[in-house]
Amino acid sequence: MENLELDLSNVQLELAFLKAQINPHFLFNTINNIIFLVSVDPPRAEKSLTQLSGIMNYLVYESDKPVVSLEFEFAFLESYIELEKLRLSNKVRTVIYIETDSNDYFVVPLIIFPLIENAFKHGPMSSNKNAWVDIQVFAKDGGLNVNISNGYKRVDKPVGYVGGIGVDNVRKRLELNYPNQYNLEINETRECYTVRLELNLSSYTRNSTTKIVNYA
Image (tube, rainbow, N blue to C red; front, side):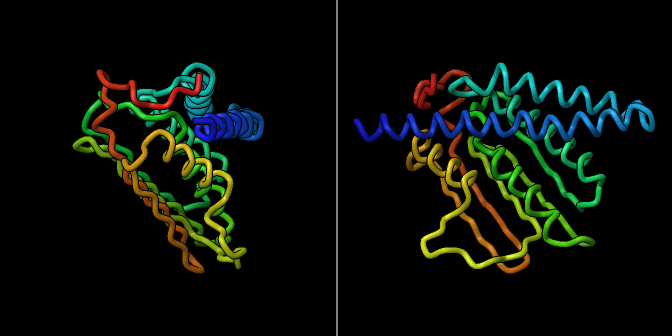
């Protein structure tokens, strides 16, 4: 019990750190891009500002909840992806597919985000001309499937290395909130990095959210 409480405390701190990292860095870059768009492409500037507003609303009002509607989580991810594409000036080839067969699913907030953020962080670094990111996220028949791939420049890792801070955080939160209900795989070659996540959502519908670990 003591170890579980310690794990919960550590992950809670890491989640707070994650949100703190999203806010200033991402906000700074996005606002600068929107300011530029105001004079050259006002409609896109307005759309981007709406997306940024949605992201901030999610981070402030939704991400502290023990669980959120998958519909809200997907809307947050879609807005983030669009603003990343704006930041990268469409220099990265992207293939995006996000879909669900029901609005009754609930999920731990920001459980997918670090994986997508990681793809946009490392994908553009893989090549000046052929950088790419492929994101497929879909919920169907009570299960969530996440497949994320990006261009990659492989470097030697220390013995025992299992992933960066973001991936490690996701792994810990999955273990605490979805024990024996998930499968997370990471594969990398010298040119491609792939993350696959399968998550059982069937126990956490609109009428059943009590099993989720509460960070509040």
